[in-house]
Length: 444
Ligand code: 4AZ
Image (tube, rainbow, N blue to C red):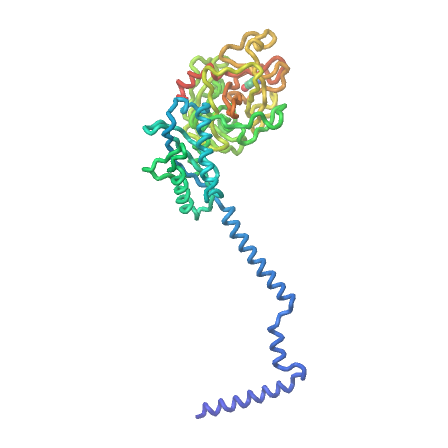
């Protein structure tokens, strides 16, 4: 066949060509030798490749560790616990009462102990008692448990946590019992849990502070989380204090020129520009006996259009009972965005100053305020002057730390002659004097 012939011819040709090339090659370079050379690796190359592989493996392991360890997020679970051995006491409803604080501590210690010796000890952070309620099995406590884990572990961790709670509380050893008719743990969304965790009053700056405050100081973010700024057209006019998720307490004279709630806004967070939270104002209730440009009954409550969600940096201050007494010389703090001195500049960041309570007798001396200090006012500062509230601080809080570092609102910045002048300390509306009025208007 013609095809066969052509193939034969071609193969002959190829052999011929190869032979020619073979002859041209130098004697030392045999074909086999050349092939082996291209495939063998030098030691430095082997070292380089091994290093690269080890490095790549290390990066992969590192990334895995990072995602397993550091991409952990906070998860909250709510649970209800029964304490059949404890009878309900009305003081369990009194915020910061000793009996309530002690029992909360006892429950938290018990839960800590259970989880710290469990398989979840790396994931468990803390337990927090939210409230107590009486029921037909004695006393019931609602608690929030805080865990840290990667989200893909959620179902396993919840199941394990349920088992741990169940196994530990079914034994008769613990004073805590679990309501077996309910699922033990239910997941709570983070913002809602933070709101609940921060809903107790008066948690602010640690007192006494690490270093002594001599003059006005910049306040740190979570030091005075109840401090609000009342603003008109985006301009700060007055300070105010958050006393619940919807109510602020401030001075009546802040509204001397503008009482329309639509014109006002409240902001929270230590900086006026770039605040943490803003709220519209729904209503303003000024004390009925207040007369503009006078100093008596200088108190008002402001209702926010929508409640704030409590967080570490925004939450309420405690209100003292009407019987709460503050002794002269008590150390107290006043905070605000007021002028740094009379007719001086206004700061953007919240400031704090420590002052002393002065007796009304001292403040009513002829050379001080000569009888202008009434029973509804509290006097604080120094006869020597210097540390004081000033213009723009009006309406803001004067607070005192009680045991367990809980802050109580005792005064509202109201008036004074100048700022930091000798024999002219600051005057504040006395909150205890108006305690019933606050209750009648805001139901707090
Ligand atoms: C004011 O004008 C003002 N030194 C507030 C407080 C004091 C003086 C003035 C106290 O808002």
